[in-house]
Length: 104
Length: 293
Image (cartoon, rainbow over all chains, first blue to last red; front, side, top):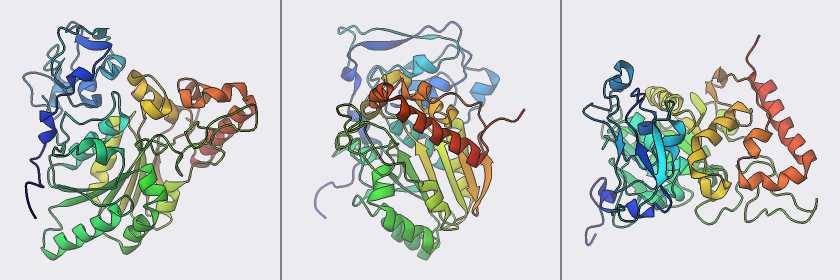
């Protein structure tokens, strides 16, 4: 085989999809968050994270640790609004996208 | 950024149910996994050359032979004596599973390979421009089954192929249907399937905002409504017998149809909606979905 046919795992992270947002971006209000983890689970872009927990073990959701620490990565968010739709506490709002803030 | 084996930066549409489901499946399976992909949306948007979203070894060959390639991979790791430590997942869309890849899938199930086959069912060939597939539901508007004037054309005239039952008829240890609307349930089924030796089949209902013409934020809601109306029963079969089902308090099918543009034309044809209600009622009766008492 010639050339680099095999790319590195997760190399798609170099492809910033943030500029795909045309209308809305999520705003994490960080007031009533109960750390249920739903926004993180359902994000199709895998661009929601929380601090300072280890997320893979799911313990944060049970103990309520990491409340109000959830946020999204504007480099990858496509603005679909699923996180705001599933949030049981309506703690995520979709706000008008500001072209000046758009990164990517 | 959360730790995941399916990374950001893929080129799926905003609100894609399939990219969500694919991440849930591979994260549930864990890092000791080899993924074999049929051609389809998932293959195209997750591996835009020269990038890959996958954090596990991943291979794509053709539209129809994901199951056959996975059979070879599984045989090779068995020969190397690593069969107990590495999971093999073959996956494809509904077209690559129920139409084009059915022969390879049937062969894989029949030969008894230790592989989990996951079908991401978005109910049409969405990647090539929303053509009807064998898993497109009755009445749906696709580019090859467009609704027309009056009763002359009302969308897809054929019923959804009963893929889980076809897989189950092979007498394999585990068959399940899951939904992107119930992510924890989906991950539980994947973990359970991987713990079982032999061929396994899981079909995941994955909403497509582009093809189903619903709002991108409705992805989870639409998937939930499909289950709650009885149109997409969540069932598990073990060795041919139903071992569990998700029971529901049935909602009328209109609630599921009205949020999607692909069923919009049906609201001028009430008798067709009645037929879809019949499909849901039959499912509820057949699988005992209704909550008792």
